Length: 227
Image 1 (cartoon, rainbow, N blue to C red):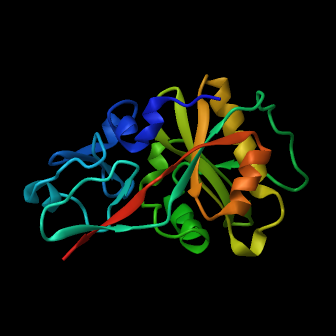
Image 2 (tube, rainbow, N blue to C red):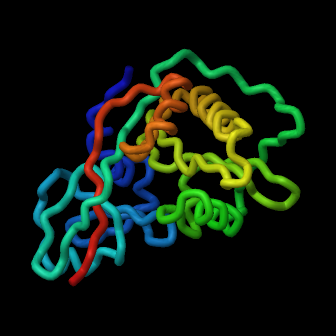
């Protein structure tokens, strides 16, 4: 199992390496551009941010793992824990074609991806999240019903994200198929997949374990609130 120390603070690691081009300064913090992703990061847990830095943070931005100490007038609202998992299984074979299912590139399909994530797992996907990596999906006619993509990029480690299926289409194996396609492509590039899932979401964790992921740690998770 790979447990790189960069994964202890993955947003900061991504923003200061492979995704520096997507970063924007927020005082003493760094964050993704707001239209790309609602995440900010500091280099270590407990780092103090003064009022000027706090004022530069977008509303409702999220921190993961390393939580800052904020100036008066700002606070972090704790959210449920996030379980981090890293792939440690065998190489993933290229998935074969499934009956009646075509896996499609979602490049340029921003509105469709936002609509699906709003229905299946709202809160984190933004208008330009799709530029963070490669996103693929399955359609029923023109309707996007399942998707999977790449979010945080640390170079040789890359996060699987937006793994979601419309509630009306669950139970058909779409998530499994799309994950295998994405993981195979990552491994062909010499990249190790990792992911984050709600600590209470034991059903999803069981799926990921069946695919070869192992738990590395549970991360703190909080949202900025201004008084």
